[in-house]
Image (tube, rainbow, N blue to C red; front, side):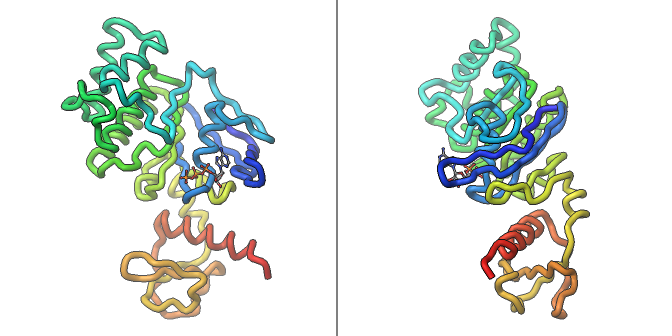
Length: 273
Ligand SMILES: Nc1ncnc2c1ncn2[C@@H]1O[C@H](COP(=O)(O)OP(=O)(O)OP(=O)(O)O)[C@@H](O)[C@H]1O
């Protein structure tokens, strides 16, 4: 099992990760979700060995068995799509027909056929993300780590990307990825919800929904603004003890509602009284 166990990472006075435990098995896709500064990038960098934990233990394969798409560009601007893939293939010892077959297969699966000889610098943001993901998985790594692979990728191309990720997992990779899109995170086998360095909840989407307590209502005029947030034209309101003191409609929360309600609870618990 690939895992970070009770990992704490601090940058000066900022605790980026506070006693975080995450495990990912071969064939599994684990999605890290959480807002800006939640610690997603730091956790991924810790797993791939770029950041050393101050406390806790990381169990990960050898560097050669890791494929990593960082939050950065993920490809070389001055190389074409094919050259980027060839270069990465060379680093991992892929040559000849094996490299050509794998490269062309990934170009198709990433929907990059029309751009195969275009410089990476001339790709759209979404195409560049897909190229980066293809480069990370080219050598069939045991651990595939993707930092927000779908950011900037249009909804249709995101389907290509998810198919690529699912296929890598089906071929045996352990996949750990971060995303800010909660609708797509619901597709991952396992979710880890991070908030300011801590794990708020973890499990399959069904586990997360099943473990969520309290009630969420929807209305245009919440009775407790500090426990409410906007969703579309309405506002949601969270009742942690489950008993809404309102006749507003009770709704079945989705992942976005659950993440907001849990982080709101944490903020209220930590607020000075
Ligand atoms: N190299 C660093 N030096 C100092 N502080 C850092 C460093 N890397 C991260 N941090 C801080 O650690 C916290 C977690 O950052 P991290 O980038 O891991 O979050 P994130 O969930 O990936 O957020 P985002 O989506 O905004 O990148 C933030 O407060 C950030 O400012």
